[in-house]
Image (cartoon, rainbow, N blue to C red; front, side, top):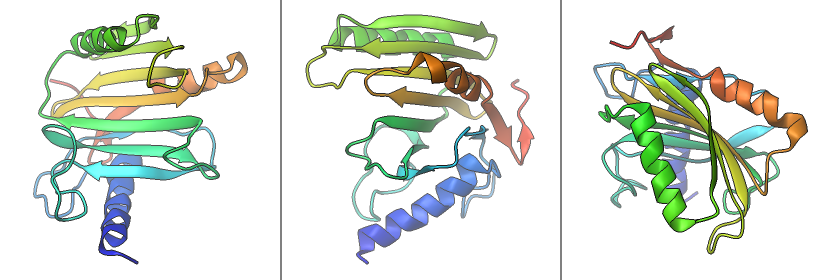
Length: 196
């Protein structure tokens, strides 16, 4: 096993505890961090990629992306992170205090700039969250895909959970994935966070 593989394995183990179980304590960190807790409706998922942006990638390279936070991408057991058809993403943007609807609007504008045929629909808005769905087709350098996203404001930053499917989410399974996304909660120390 290479150094990079060992590092990724260690990060994955920590990320699973942080993000999935919602225990909210980062290794070596005195203050517990917020996490996102949600129920994945099927059991045949595994971590395809995880990264802690507070650390260096593979222990020696600067990590991709900006700022601080984490990302975990779950794929089906029989798929590869480079060739997935369904993807569950959990992200935490530590210190980002932007309103969820403002962040969503920037995401919409960015996607529309890349893919003019973007289809975008807000499903629900609450004081500290927004849920929306978008899809693209015929976009250069992007596979046709559809994504359900929920942005949640926490006290420590902004949380993003998403379910993506290529080319589209089937009508038969859509409600299951919307329910999963809508059921996501910001957690800290195993308790749901009350946003200040």
